[in-house]
Amino acid sequence: MAGCSPNRFQELVEEHQADLYRLAYSYMKNRDDALDVVQESILKGLSKLPTLRNEQSMRVWMTRIVVNESISRLRRRRPDFSYQEWDGPAEPEQNRDELVDLRRSLDLLDPKLRTVVVLRFFEDMKLEDIAHVVRAPLSTVKSRLYRALAQLRVDLEQKEDL
Amino acid sequence: MTQSGKQQLDQLRQEYRKTELPPELPYAVRAAFLKARRPRRMVRRLVTAAACLFLAFLAALNLSPSFAQAAAQTPLIGPLAEVLTFTEYHVATDREFIDVRVPEITGTSFPELEDRINKEIQEKIDEDLTAARTRAKEEYEAYIATGGNPEDYIPLTISFDYEVKSCTEKILSFELERFEVRASGFTDLTYYNIDLTTGKTLTLADVLGPDWKKKADAVVQAAIDAHPENFFTAEMGGFTGVSEDQRFYMNSDGNPVLVFEKYEIAPGSSGELEFEVPIGE
Image (cartoon, rainbow over all chains, first blue to last red; front, side, top):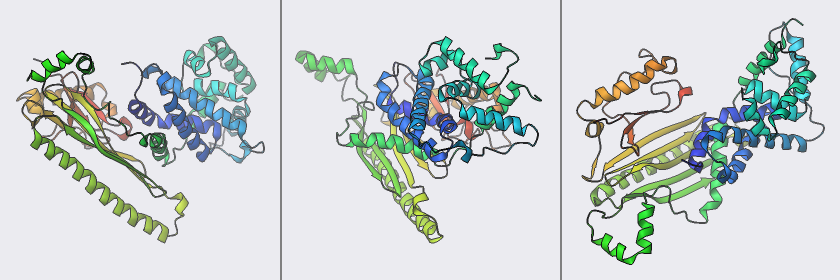
């Protein structure tokens, strides 16, 4: 079956609502804004539904809409907004400092670089799919990932882990 | 460095996966879809998706008067059974979010059957909504009386919708879906499977034969055996065999599809489950 009907789209979105919310929350860092992003993304998705070629690409496609919506909202956000208002979850005593550093560095990363890290490591997306999400060549995605990891001072033992 | 970068990232990954989901998420998602739908109310929607139309045939009717005449005289074709929206209504206030499409069947050549099913559906929806609104009104008053902030109130959110599962000359099968959000979303599904040649409601025995239970059980059990971790065990109230009133619909291949609601035989994370039972020979 070609395309995706609005009803089927709704089913798929409801099925993946937790993923969409988590992704939005990773940018917005608060509940209300993340919910707004999810809602706005649904409206955008519905209006662009005729351009969705098949169901299989729905995840990539919807991820793209959520990422774009989140980033454009971050840009519009008051300049005095600070992630320092957000403490993050508690963690075991050991490793606390390193983890806090890493979390903070991740939050301060340029959204374009952070997107690649989040999608690759937290959403387990393939690099090819990420390239579709951010509409950039695969080589650009790889280079963003390396730059991001360098800034985060994360040394993966094996680059193949990417 | 006491930890490798990979381990640290994995820890952040776990935090990410554990992001707390707000209880109003399903409501917000539904609300977005309702919002998108609302402007279209102006144009009274013809329910093309639900109607069982043989498009090529209709095109021929439009194009060729002689073909239409010939068709009208052919008793085989007869009236086309379809499911239409009898009525639809929407309420969107701070306290209620109601989105209802009431289906009705027509063109089956069994008027009493149509009346009975249409009446049953309409009464079911009416009674349900009346009860839900009364309950929600009491809850709201109790919520305010105990100092709740009206702005934080999660409105009563209910929708009724339907979907045609299959429609052939012989069988009409459709789903009536009731969805309600309170703390999380709940879906109730009712199926109508009509034998258009006899005007009776189909049972699994009609479709699968006398050993329907054995066939149906085998399909479900095979799926459970393949991934037992996704299902409740029998001790936990899991699958113990299909029941006499097992929910099912008929798909376009003419096979019955068993439907289990969320939590019926598996944890909520598995959602609603469907099992197609091939009719075989």
